[in-house]
Image 1 (cartoon, rainbow, N blue to C red):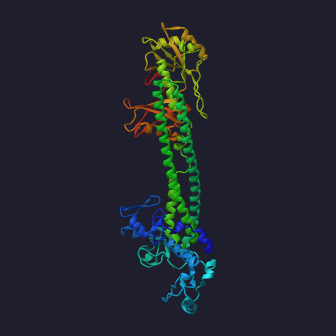
Image 2: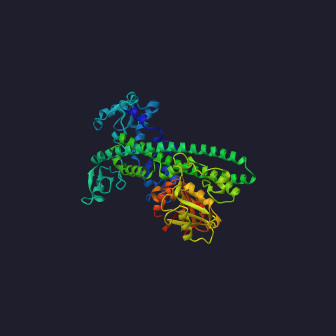
Length: 571
């Protein structure tokens, strides 16, 4: 049994992680980590009323008498004694002096019950005296073979004693206060009937079963965290790979442009760097959180496994509340599987850098055409005829549906200022765009820009748009555009604390805002408005159906169409 015991108990489990030596008077913290009393006194000189754990940083309130008042870990004391004695015999039996007499004679045997090393003379006395009747005296040869070794649970020494009544063994358990107590406590501090007192052995049997279940819970949680840790490592490598690939792609595109475009390329490169640093910090911080939780669960699991295998009933009862609180806290508060924030970040990393590159070409187009329109939108009319091409919806990233044209909306550009809404509706009816009054007419920020939403799908939309282009509209040349389904919202009435990061976090959580997959947030500090763009256009409908509140301030959220400009108003 001892051979197995030595193999089961690792050297680290019996060593203080401050001094790296075998435990001397170990004291246990609330997180179940234990350290030498003297080590904690030195470590906690500037700790104040709470002592942070040197391993996991969880704080433990200090008693009035400081480190000395912390709970003594009798389980470790017994374990150190048992394993230490076994190691002494294995490594150098000829150097062990007799513990029973003062002659200094070398020991040849050990009393399993007294846990004392005995010389040959004391062995004979031990066997002859009536007081030692029934004690098992094992020779060093038998001890080295592991024949007579016992676990700390079977040892009569170092049983936990009462903190209030010196020297009194804890033989009872108060169910009301959930703590192990001595006989004096049952009379003075935990009297019946106010307190439910039970024999500690019967309680320990129940607590062993509960601890076994908690151990399984801890092991399951640890496996989940290990898997999440590996996933985060892989994700971080993926971020780095995508970072390198996007930077190379961006540099290749920028190298062939003019000096003005090179300046825009540099701005895009800085944006990519900032996004990468932000995602990298998030992944590294999450990785550190997981590792810290793993460390605590690992040590807790090892502690529970050892105390279940080798702990006495009193030791089980003395540490049960700490074990239960620690494991319940860890398994309930530590995130294991990837959360919505993690998944949103991963989804964003799939097109890492795509948005800055997209904006680069958007600005190039604006510089060349001197018009403010989104990249996917192609103007019908002169622009289309001059290039001889047909407008096509933008291709979305893999796994995200392509953004289609809105079959019930068109945009008119160049509408004279004097044209009334009724006149506009009449001409649209004449051209067959709509048979009834449009559902809505929205005027853009640029003069002459109007978006019309019909009550139904516009049949033969391409043909009718070409017809408008060939027709003198109110005596003026009017161009038309198709409108892509909305993938962006305009947010008004922002609270004072709102910024890019807080809005990104809010609209990236599907449960909270209906959103998810945010690719860009732009805040106008002067107007206290923001534009939030989504990777999947279908998200916008969910967002618009929700009521949104940030910091007790209700947000006003509207669909945003780039073809209308930064501001729009309903007619």
